[in-house]
Length: 101
Length: 167
Length: 367
Image (tube, rainbow over all chains, first blue to last red; front, side, top):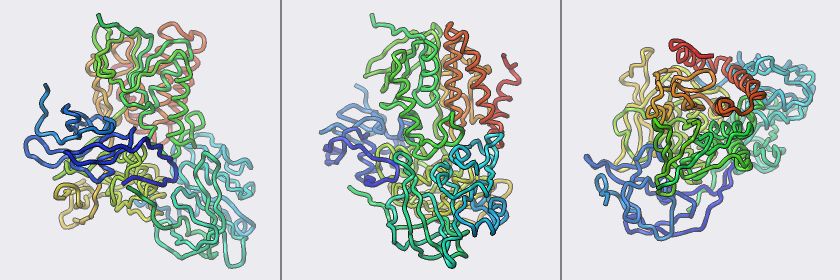
């Protein structure tokens, strides 16, 4: 869910685009991070921990903690809290620690 | 205790209230700021010199109530939103309480809104008399409420309906 | 052969400290390059919708977001300052080379002076299920709400009643999100009481001497159990309360982000009052590695107002050491030091003063 009216801020959203989360279409706006767009769509589980497979999501949302790593357009270990949404982007939950080619 | 609850006690408040005599004369600013923190925009906001200049920026604000004309500029300048204007001369039964307000939706003039005390408890539904902007970039509004005289030292906030979320 | 970028002063971090350092140094004539990890400089200022405290010199009464815009404008209009956003500094080496990642490329910079202004990051709290999605640092919630305009959730439990916990709770209310309670392990509210009063009069309870026992939820956070602490900070069995929330915000303190300082070989010291390991530095903010300065939260967690003044002090000191502003710089340094003293002279600044004395006392304060 996005904030429509705010007492202090005016949100300048970019163009509305569609990207994909594990194959499912999700709406986002250019200029938003993938994590923010997923969050707005109600998607808070971004992956699972490598050993115990516990659900995992954001923590710091600023690129420090590596909690939000996902595979974006085939590239693993992308911090989706800093990576911006692009139309047609393929965002997938990462299995394990990611395979660096 | 204020430091445990965030709510000033009657004793805390008695330190910042003007005399009843002054309150019945006309609008006056009440600065509910009790802690020594480095902050002094209120002293610069007051053009009447009623908020006395601080020797040390950590001092608690002090008022000369006779110099205060209740203009209300200080309300939207205090970073802590701790200043209120109370006008007990409004009418026999009612006083005007002016509060800083930074929420949406804004109330409408003439609307009756739930008025809250310092603990966020509703003490009644009273009428909004004015809604004044703090200035183009300021975005702190001042809401004027007509409340029963006996509640003029209690009402410090209002509650309206919810904010719109979408998509 | 990859090109080596030359600059006089390299500022790592484009938050309030970094921007003020760059502006101050450039004003004296030095050429400055700012590396900023985010796509928009401003640091934590970009999320601060509330009005700042302090005095006029630190922009008191202005909202953090506007101060951020103003500081950025100051450097963007100064031809002596270059800003590289989306650039992450990777290391500071013995030979003086600084490496960074920019546009997926590895680049090298040879600065004559470096000012590290990398700020601080949220601490975590230990309790069962603290890894559930929905449990965020307070800064993360601010980023979602105030930068992305995304609603963090429906109902929040705020852990920590310091300034960050109190301010973010207020911001949540402004975004139309319910705050179930603010809990604080200490017996009293740590943040400014005016911030506490604002949320109390909106009906948000503040529970001192309370902490989280555990969080629970199937895939995401569904609730938390809190309990009371006694005078010895021990939990009291039987005082458990269940609170249904879908977001928990941890505002339990910040730790300085000092990785670059460690790696650069600065002497470090653990000072609890400054919130963690900080570089040993002299009065003018130069660390034990000559030519490397620090400013802002990385030198000790404090406030934006002090970060701005420290930035100015480090910028002037670095520029002066290169020969700039010989006649004006000493006066500017003295003014900055006086401002810092003023900000720290009240009860709110006691802890920081104690921390700084500890930091400088034993090693022998220079100057």
